[in-house]
Image 1 (tube, rainbow, N blue to C red):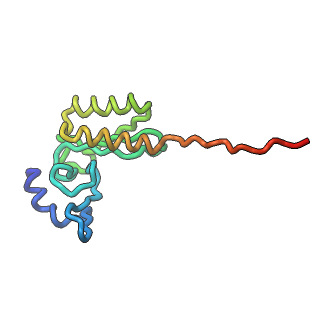
Image 2: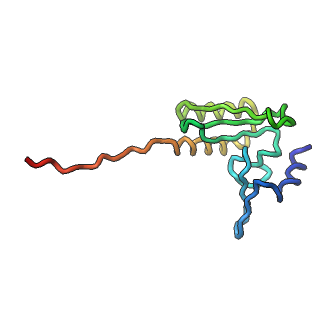
Length: 138
């Protein structure tokens, strides 16, 4: 089934759709949707190739999950994941290189990099300011 036909079937009614009053654009909580917007471009269910970026289990780095196009009809084995724990520059470079080399939705490269960098920024340690104490009097 083509991606456009699948989108026409699920676009108004699916379990991941989040509709609110007074909001023109609807949100989506589906996996492999990088911007969490309910639109054909960002939908991760209907496309043969899709990527997802989520925080790693060890709270250091992020997990890149992608869908293999050849195994799209086997939902149990079509997803592959890899954790990127190296520093932020190296991890973002590897993510960009992966998307380019494997031709995984080049139109979503910037969205993937933004999501990964937001995850990495949220995992930074905050420096604690030392409290000044008065000197001891003798």
